[in-house]
Length: 137
Image 1: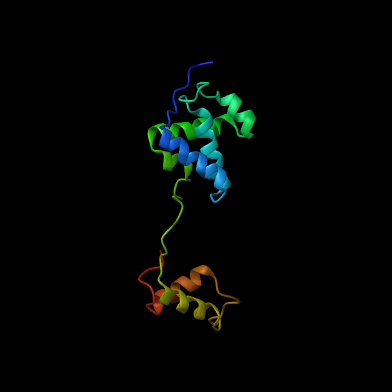
Image 2: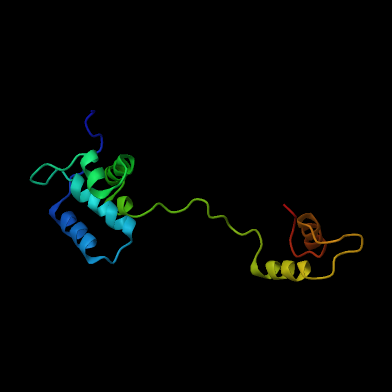
């Protein structure tokens, strides 16, 4: 088995804060598990730290997850290893609250003559026609 690429070396203060985090129970389960991973992987322990396989069996966590936690600890920081990454999928709204209110009112209004119901394209075109939005993109 190849040597670990990311070695966890905790200071005494880091060990104390991680131990406190795991024993108080005030944090999320994910954060507590990541703290336990870091504590078990620490090479400054008397036994030199556990292998990924030992940690995996003890905590019932995949070895890949353990590798990722160690990597984030070494490359980034302790806080980044404990907390999830911010979501990148959050998209900005294309219309503001006022335009959204007009859209809802329009969708609840009478359908134009010749149509059975409002379609997304029809709503978009009508919003542009009424100048609630600049374009329908």
